[in-house]
View (spheres, helix red, strand yellow):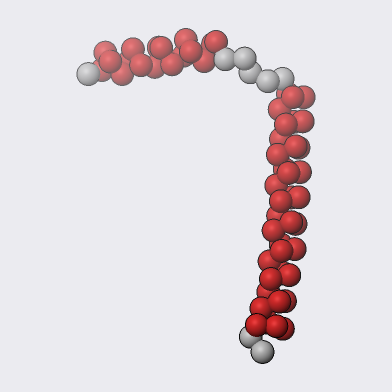
Length: 62
């Protein structure tokens, strides 16, 4: 059992050496893009939520 666990970690370590890790600048740029898209999406959804809430209060639930 312990031999299989050891083998797993050794193989996992070998696979991690094959990974093409991004540079610090690439990681920062991609992180900024993800945060930007998340903020734009949040604003978009918030605007529609406010619009639908307004419509529900003023036109449907008289």
